[in-house]
Amino acid sequence: MSPKFSLSLIFTLFLSIHSLLSWEQEGVASWYGGVFQGKTTANGEIYDTHGYTCAHRTLPFGTILTVENLSNGKFVQVRVNDRGPFVDNRIIDLTYAAARDLDMIRDGTAPVRLLAQEDQIPPVRFTVRIGAWGNPINALTHRQRLEEARINPRAELGGDGITRIFVPDVQEKDVFPLVSQLEELGYENLQISQIR
Image 1 (cartoon, rainbow, N blue to C red):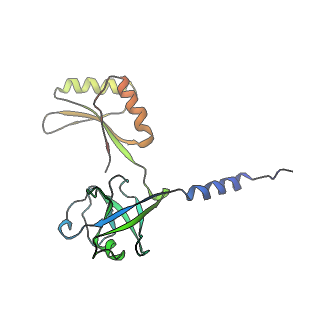
Image 2: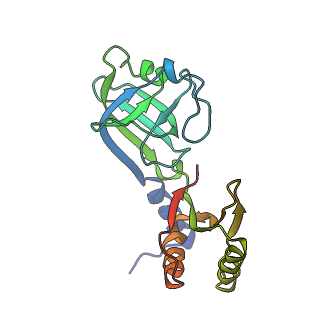
Image 3: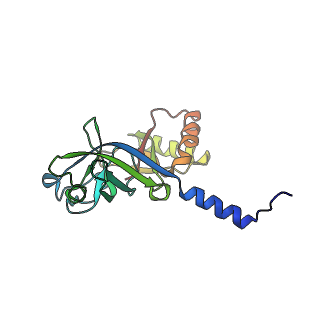
């Protein structure tokens, strides 16, 4: 006799398995402090060396990371709000406060493991820049053509007199289909940037 499973039990098992999904990375951490205090981070916040934030090259801003110092087993939790480090053999730059809690101030670096649960990594969103035109009539023609193709572009006139057309706030899953559609329409040299 085969066992019977209720839909709610299957859904509960799915949620349990799904919650175990995580992202992990090992490497060398460093920290940055004093000279950056009060300066603007890559996501537009003001750097606070006494806060619990970090710089990572690729993780979306807002990602919550647990950082473990592999030398002593100490942990700290930080939020990604900056880009870096820009030294080849390092994977994360921590604030002074986070580095102090990991007991790595004296050495300046430490071997670490970074861990983020899947629900602690915000969805990434992008802007797709289509082109720029000095003639406003040409820009309007392109905008209308894109709207006819069911693309919802935005046009902005810059102080330099150039009209830039782009699609803002594109979900990660929609970037590739949008780029493919734009290329079929003949648009080349598209610029894709992550929204801060």
